[in-house]
Each structure stands twice: as C-alpha cells, then as structure tokens.
Amino acid sequence: MEGKQEYCHSETLIIPRPCTVADGAELAVHVIRIGSLRSQGEGLRLGTVRRPPRGVRKADYADQDYFDVWFPELAPSAKLVNWALSEPFTEQRWVNYAKSYRREMHAPDRQRTLQVLARLSHQTNFSVGCYCEREDRCHRSLLRELLAEHGAKIATGKTRPAKRKRLAKRQ
Image (tube, rainbow, N blue to C red):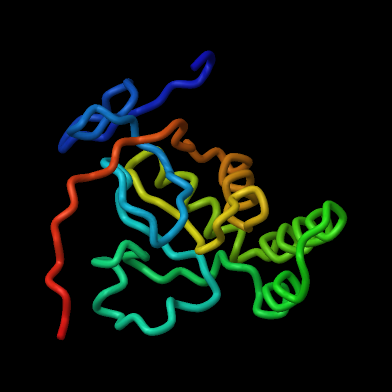
C-alpha cells in the first residue's frame, strides 16, 4: 500500500500496521448474497434490501443467514426495484438501472452512510448483501463500487465457511 498508512486501534495505542482479526484475515467489508452460508471473518451482516425475507420471523433472520441488521437505506427505491423486476435485464436496461441507483445513492444522507461504512471497513469486518443470485446484475455490485469510491477496504477472494451449528427444526 504505497503512500497510504493504515492504522489499527488497540485499547490504548494507535499502531501503524494493517489490522487483522483473530483468524488472521484483514479487516474489510464483504459483499455477499444474503441467505448464503456465513464465512469466517465476515462480521455483522447488513441486509441492504428493500424488503425483509417473506415467511421468516425477525428473530430468525440472523440464524438463517439472512442478515443481522436490516439496512434498507442502501437498497434501491421501491420504484427502481419494481422497474428492475418488470422484465429481464438487457445490457442497456442494466446501464439504465446502474445510473438510476447511483443517482439515488448520491443523496446527502446516502453519501454520509457510504462514508461511515467506508471508514468502518478499516476498523472492523462487516458484510453488505442482497438476495440476487447474480452479483453482476444486482445493486450489491454497484454498492461495492460506491464503497470503494468512498475509500472502503473491500474483501477480496473467497473465505472459508464458518463452522455451522445445526438448528433444530420447529414443529
């Protein structure tokens, strides 16, 4: 990392070195598909979706690997979601969608949220995600770009899944 000093905050000192977590992974924001198995070091999951999952109790969102916190402030507007789901994406529809989503994220409150998350990515691991199967046709790919543009540290590569406890099925 040429020309840029990174800092890790300990209890009393600011140490000029890259931060790491206990398993050795560097701190960063992870961009994930919600509902997928959690990975080690992924941190708190933020569900950047317009609507929470149907048929799932709020108390079960985290246990079922959806998200820990519902965070619709970074989701596309209901109007944009409805337009996006109205017909399959073509290359031109995707370009139009990306422009519209970026325009929505340009609002001052959204810019502040992106700045906060970008800074947090240097202090702790967390994840942002959406339900879409294809990241390349999902707002989370655009969110990844926006966070990077705001200086976020973005996780790269695949991480290994965390050990998963089995949940008893409800009768």
